[in-house]
Every structure is written in structure tokens, then in C-alpha cells.
Image (tube, rainbow, N blue to C red; front, side):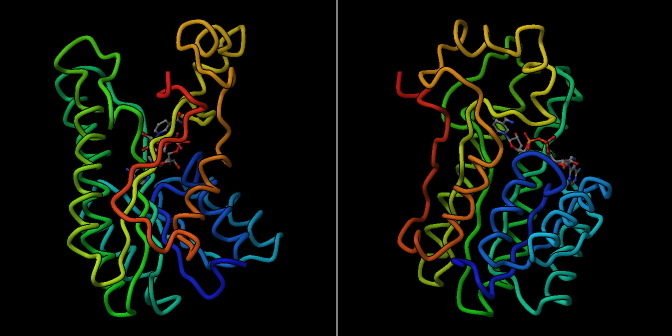
Length: 251
Ligand SMILES: NC(=O)c1ccc[n+]([C@@H]2O[C@H](COP(=O)([O-])OP(=O)(O)OC[C@H]3O[C@@H](n4cnc5c(N)ncnc54)[C@H](O)[C@@H]3O)[C@@H](O)[C@H]2O)c1
């Protein structure tokens, strides 16, 4: 159990990559707090975690609201006494219009900033911690957006990598590690319309994108990386953006 006695706050943990991160952290012994707007998804995730012998609670949280994120951090400390691990994984659809640009910045740049700013002082109190920001390949390369209004997502994802590196440098001496994961194409609610295409999204993966491993990624393949980064196995890794994409970026 690599996360025995650790406490993990997973923002956006009711579904997809956040849920998989919560499950992987819990499987390694961490007590988890799922902070999300989706209570039903969180309760399903927590039921599975408890059935497997783990512990966790849900805190209703809008990740785009600074005060709400602070309240989730406070609730975590109130319930479990500290916070060792923060995973920022909230996500949702946004339109490719002017309002959608701002929505993408709120969800994918401001939300992880709120998480970091409120969790770091708590981690400092207990002598360290590990923050994992779920970024994207759109954080390290341009996306397929065709208009200025479509650049909100890649702008936010590049930005969160800037936050990750900067906070890693600022907090290294405090033993707070800050890393990002850049997932490729992973089956979650966010990508459901793509992999539920008539061919199961095979043409997208095999022919359009030419993903070397020739398949979609599964959420647990990100969750296990989050748990690794949270653990002492990654004790000298900070400021990194770990690409987990079946080889896509290696081409
Ligand atoms: N799935 C992929 O292929 C992929 C690839 C690259 C990056 N990502 C990133 O992974 C992260 C998670 O996405 P996912 O694929 O797991 O999607 P998902 O839809 O399965 O999960 C997103 C979670 O965020 C929650 N959420 C939405 N709005 C929220 C809000 N305002 N406050 C709190 N929680 C909120 C949802 O309820 C859900 O539980 C996102 O940042 C996304 O950009 C996903």
C-alpha cells in the first residue's frame, strides 16, 4: 500500500480520469475526498472504493468557483486532518464560441489554479505533498481547433503546464511536488461521442490519428499514473508533464 495514511482530494473525481485516480489512490491506501458537481457519480465511485476496503467522502464542489474549492480543501482537512495529494481533473464540454473560450479557461486553467492555491498552504503545514494536474496533449502541442474561439482549451492546457512547472520550482524546498499528466485519447464521458461512433472510434484512432498502440486508452491507465506520481516512488519527480498516449506524440 503505497499511499497508506495519505489523504487525497480529487477535484472532478466523480467520472473518468478523476474517478480512476480516486480508485487507484484508494487502492493504495489513501482516504479520498471526491469534490465534484456530480453527486451520483461520486457515490457510485465511493461505493466501489468502500466495497474494496477503502474510505472516502463526497463534497459538492464547483471547481470553477474559488470559494467552493477552498471549502472543499477545508472540508478535507476537517474530515481527515490534512491533505497530502491533490488531483485536478474537472472537465466538461464547452462550445467553440466566444463564451466557450472563457468557459474553457474557467474550467481548465482557473479551476486547477484554485485547487493549487488552496491546497499548497495545507500541504506546507504537514511537510509536503503531491499535486497532479490533468492536462492534455493540447498542453504540449496545438490542438485541431480551427478558429480563435476554439483556442480556449489548448490555451488553458498550456497554461496549466506553466502553473505546474512554476509551482514545482516554488515549492520544491517545501517537499511539495507538482506534476501534470498529459493523456492522449482515453475512453471517458468527455470522449463518449467519439468512441461510440459506429466503428467504436477505430477509424479515428487507427487511421486519422495513427496512434501507435492502435487503441483507445482506458481511464485506469491514467489513474495508476496519478497514484504513482502521488507516491514516494515518484519522490524526486517534480515539474514534469507525463505524456500517457499510446505513443501518439512519439511519431
Ligand atoms: N478523456 C480524454 O481523452 C482526455 C484527454 C486529455 C485530457 N483530458 C482531461 O481530463 C480531465 C478529466 O476529463 P475526463 O475525460 O475524465 O471527463 P469526464 O467527463 O469523465 O470527467 C470530468 C469530471 O469533472 C466533473 N465536473 C464537470 N464540471 C465540473 C465543475 N464545474 N466542478 C467540479 N467538477 C466538475 C464532472 O462531473 C466529471 O465527474 C479534463 O481536464 C480533460 O480535459 C481528458
